[in-house]
Length: 128
Image (cartoon, rainbow, N blue to C red):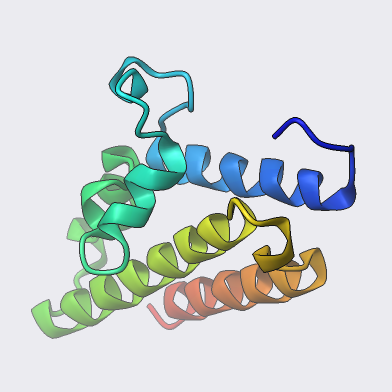
């Protein structure tokens, strides 16, 4: 943002990268010509409409349970859990890409939270 190079700048970049990965949008995409920006897009959808900004490819891969023979209740529970995990990952991306460097999440905390999200998703897949 035009100031000195610091680890907080790296945290900002990491947050934008997370947002890019989960939305499949780049900060330079045409939809941001009005000055909105990737951070603002996700922020406006957070927390109630995060599924509106998540890349549909992620959703189609995560929701593919036709061949597993799970019940409708189990599928709904898994969808809720996946939505929670996606919202958590986007929350981390938003925190890291906060405009004020002092309000950005520390990478130690980012790592712990992302590992917890991963473990939650892996546990749900193992219980199939």
